[in-house]
Structures are given as C-alpha cells and as structure tokens.
Image (tube, rainbow, N blue to C red):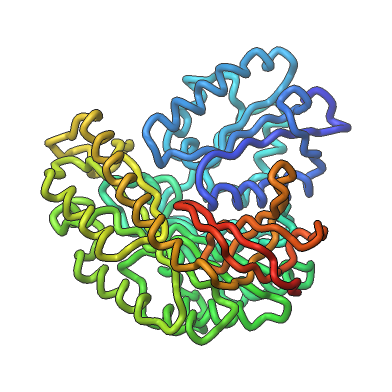
Length: 444
C-alpha cells in the first residue's frame, strides 16, 4: 500500500442490483476500516472489481480490465476481485493474474476486515465459501449511494439450479435474514430520510423468515407500514414461489408499488423443463392472472432467453405468443450463453449464434410494439412520480412512477424541484420506453 496513513480504494461494480448493493456494503466496510474511496484507479492504493458472471465472457472482461491495469502493480497498488467471477474462478485468478492479492466471493464479505489485514501485510487473501454457509452479509456500515432509495437484501443465494444459471454456484444456497433485522434496517433508513425501499434477493419471494414470524407478503406489508416510507419495491421474484398473497398485499397497501417483475424465460413447456424452471406455461399464466385481476393496474415485466439448446422455431414462436397474450410493460431479453458448471453445458443441439441473434431481434421488435401500445393507456392520466433528477438540455425533470416507468416532465414557471420529492404529473405523450408529461401539483 503506497501510504498506510491514507488508505485509498477504488471499486468498480459489474452486473445486477444485488452486486450494486453488495458494493454499498463493501464500501461501508472499507470506510469503517479506515479507507477512503476515490474515483479513479490512479488515485487508489487498493483497486477492487465486484464482478458478475451471469453472461458469456464476463470473466474475460474482468481479466482484460486487470490486464489493462497491471502496469500499476509497480506503483505498489493492490488488486482484488470480488463477487461471482471470484467465486467461480477461485484461486485460478492468481494463476491468470498473479498481481492480484485478494479473491473473495460474495458469501465471504463478512470476513473482509480480516482479509484486508492480510493484504496490507503483503500476503494474499482468499474468501471462497461453499454452499453450506448459513451466513448473510449484514453490516451497519453500508455506504448508501442513493439518498432517497434504500436497498435491503433480505435473502441471499439460490436453490433453484436453473440449467443455464451460474448463480447457485457463485452465491451459495438460499439463506434469509430474520424479518426483525430487515424491519430494523428499514426503520433506520426511514429515520435517515429515505422514502423508498427496495427489497432484494436472487429469488426475493423465496424468502423464509428464520424466526418463522412473517411470510414474504407479510414482510412487504410490514415494511410498507413504517412511518415515512412512501414506496416499497421488490425484485426479483421466482414464479415457483409467487403466491396470491403477494398480490393481495399490493392491493391492500398503497405504499407497495404497482409493479411485479416475474421472469418467464421461455413460453415453451419443453424448454422450461429443459431449463429446470420448475413451473409450466399454464402455472405461470395462472400467476399472471392473479396480477391482472387486481383492482390496481400493476405493471408486469419479465426476463426472456432465446436460443436455449434445442429450442425449435415452433418453441420460439410459443414465446412470441406469450408476449401477445400477457402484454408485458417491458422485458429484459438475452441470447442464451453457456456458463461454467451449469447443467445446460451437457445439452446437445446448440443454436448457431446468428440464429440466436435473429430470434432476439424478432423478439425485441415485437416487445417494442407491445410497449408502444401499452404506454398509450397512460395518456391523460395523472400519476405520482419520485423526482430523480433533471435534464437541463431538454428543460425536463426525470421521474419514476409506481409502475417503475420513466416519466420526463416539465414543471410550471421553471420551478426548481427537490430530488427525492414526489409530484403529480399528467401524462401527455408516450414512447415505447418512457412517458412525457406536465407537473400538475407539487406533492410531499
């Protein structure tokens, strides 16, 4: 470390919202250990990458980044790899990038203080947990990067073992926090002025209270009852564990947002079975019917994969038909990519990449058309948005609705709004990926 009196670190985060929130907790832990965060690699004594391995070539991206920066090793900088690539590649990272000093998977972050002592002494440190760990990474030192929206991880790991997914191997088994600890953190956030809380988990609705006090739906309701909290979101749900009580909770609590993200991945029963998704198309549609029959207009978003090994053209068309049947408000779409250690690696009938690209283009075009149609239903409606910022070049404020839709809007007489405040906006224009409107009155 160049100067132990001024321990500086740079942290770059790849991947999902879980990784982003993990980084908030890592940053807080480092600061509690006397480190100061800086914004560039050049300023840092400790350089960390919190990595994601969910997509193809993710690990290569990390090694390329490390290779770019190995020139800094001569300056005494210390490098560390955190997260899913660290857990997936393990000590092989030391072989491929010998200038790395720290390799730690997400399930070992609770041991960061001890690992920091090791690398400060010039040694290597490794934190790699197997799937037997029961521990969650809870810390009071979380460094929140958003002053208005607070993230709370309520369940870590995954037990679903979808055939294409590396997460069960990189984040360990499912382990939930007690509802008491979750509610205590939510109350702390409220006391600090946060008004929106988002509950996180690889399968957030697979939550099981270790104390047996609250179901996931009951926990949602309880968080929504905390004084000062105006919005509660949750992601990502797994259809297998999605119960009707979740919809009932959304209906009964105005604080719970009008949005459910429910990944389907494929519209074909055969492909779903090959993916080991643990539900059928009809079972998924039953859950969609619960959401669509609610008294509130709940937006539905999803994840979709095209080109899974053996997927026929007819099976791909079954996915397309599902889009027409449900009418998703948005979708995250991907080409299948083989991941290390996953069961899908053993499947035959790989789809050529050019065909996967074609299917993805067709899927995206259909979904864009659906979103264009779906967003028109908001024209003329007034809705409450949280102010997230301003686009000076357009003279518009940027907000997000309860349905998690971006709504760009103008304020009367050039009024200056406070980020994190809530205002009512009337929608005047719709686009496939956003809405435009005019503020009609200032809210709390």
